[in-house]
Image (tube, rainbow, N blue to C red; front, side, top):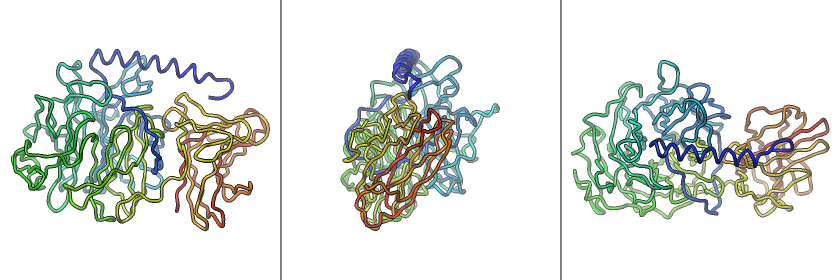
Length: 522
């Protein structure tokens, strides 16, 4: 991280250990979602709100429920004032990371899926989990136990893909994974619906709709649910990340009657014949989330398209769907996937969950749209997560710069991903900063996650003019765990501002770490 540590040595050792562990798990049939593809260079208009799961997160899911690492975070309204959050392959004490299924000595504590609940209505400052479906020992337990059989011999795991409530009944769709292939490829045995009448504590998955996949070509192995007009719309993709998207619908009261499902064939709805379905969005589509957005009056579809999370919109559930808009770029969040919209998103602010393979946990993100469902008011920061390693001497054009001694950590020290910025010394002011173009006389909200050495006694995060005069800032002393700081300001007559985070280091060896910076109008 800083002087006195050896992050690159530590990272090399950890990556080697993780690679060895994944190879061992693959042989035993214990691997989780394959790592996504490499990054693109698109800009990320979204901003990170909060780390939802794992160590160093406000929810402390590791300490409360032994959820140390997990992914997905499929969200739906349970109809009784709670948001259900359903996660995929989950690991506990033995996990060391990075990546799914990387582990060290001790109990891996692998669960194929876990369910948490939240009543948090103020998503602007994060999403607090209140309860979980737990085992007698307090751990979050599987709601749909996976068989955990060796890879390519039966069922490796049961991965959830969708959830919705109709009345007081909860429905979940999941896929039975037969084989994990290379990144972006896997085979499934079937997709199936399960239901619960006790808010997710117990589930029934016998005699429910089932999409068998003997030839590995079923179009509905990974699903997304959306309710509207008395129907539940079921969006589907094949197993893996290389297929197109399809849609079916079923009357709400007929969710458990597979013969009642109607498939869109490009011009009409055909009852009971999955083979009639034609693609509504061309490949590649994976990890779908679809909802009707009352603010824009449009259907929104968010999913992983190759390396990035993108969004499309339509005026009808079957489309036609608009051109893709990048929501999160993998250049800023390498190894991202998911993109599950929060059901309580409103007023043009879309909250959604994003998974990251490294460090194999889930984050709450947000993006804003207008009434035409176009992304507006993007995050203005270049390299907000420091994963592009955009550090030069000028601090302009989307790059960061140093005042004094600063740099980039690369050892999974960060709040997200593997990188974060740091400033450190034992004398004078040290900061990392970036000059950003803004609109004059406009309100802005700046946010970022930071932590410091225990002896830090005088630090600041904020915005200043290009002349060095402070516009607005937040003061801090010693900051232990990663903490979100927010600064509101008006740009005045300025058309550019300097965003900074730094510390005075006149009382010993003092450091600051900074990550996931957002600057948006508001």
